[in-house]
Length: 216
Length: 216
DNA sequence: AAGCCAATCAACCAATTGGTTGATGCGCAG
DNA sequence: CTGCGCATCAACCAATTGGTTGATTGGCTT
Image (tube, protein in one colour):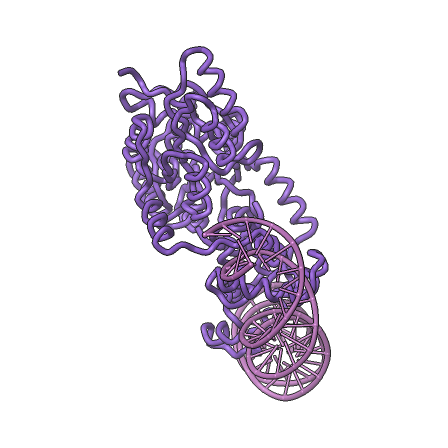
């Protein structure tokens, strides 16, 4: 069979250049297109499919400064007929990201600081229809499946978001149109689920599990 | 004059490859060495100087997974005799980072998502001994100078770090070998400087100003 | 229909946190 | 040398937060 045809999706020109250089040095890889964000990526997949030169693997970043984010784009691409495998290649190995990406239909999750050889074999696996997870990522996933973290309910997430603002219970209550008592009840549930016992620790955990984002 | 001789310092192979590819496409640039972290970078600078093939510009990432971080490395390099200009090239445009880097002696601060052309001219400026700041960065610096945010003292930063852990005042006091009263005094000062009035808000601000990092 | 969970609220008490005033020793810059 | 900022501590009070028990409503699942 011929070359593996790759679409790069990343908002950083530097990273795209790096992946292109790295991959074209290996035998059997061709970068046929690039996109700076999810929306453009979808169009590229469709365009190339119509030209009869379909993409074999999509290399997708999750954090996209502007435009459609990686998880949404992955979901959209997997809904196309004859969708190519999507390999996530990102900077962080955070729980929420991994799960969201896998649920969106990604066939692998690699970290950007992985050695070139590891990236190469991941792309190859993905092209062959297999799943490839970085060791760090796989370990995390296993741990999470064996010991599933109870997810916060929608309302609880809202609360944590306000919590991170530094608002007091009274202010949160006013903002959400509920009583202070209810806020406290929610907080107790949140502490339980996150395995902490005060609001400050809750914020730390929420930020590091990317339940909320703190700024950036 | 001849080529501009560049040392790349970044912990991500992908990014190094990208910069190398990007720069060598332009006329007049040569990447003479690479290093995955600060310690190795210093050694490279010294090694090449001894060979009589000194580095003209160091391109330095700030966030380094392991080993010496970018600010420390910059400081160390600038202490060498005949030190080359150090151009910071990083992902985030955060206040604390910029100031620390400039204080450490960096001659410029570019963002990784900058267009190639901008990176090219920044390297050129740096090689010529000039200072180059990304527009976003320059704007921030100006704003900060006109309206200087009081910096947290070293001790105060230590406190904020523990704060973000979710520790109570008592625990923090024990950890730092000071009394609870002192912890409270520090906190009041911290609230003042950050313009907030409780610990939760302080964490938010500290995280978003990258005074502390929350996980990663 | 019965059971469960999310979401809502109340009342109460213990513990923690926030705010204030005041005081000491140390080092550094003018 | 004098002043300023940093770091340290004390004592006290008000406000907030955390913990608990108990109860109601509505939606979803079995």
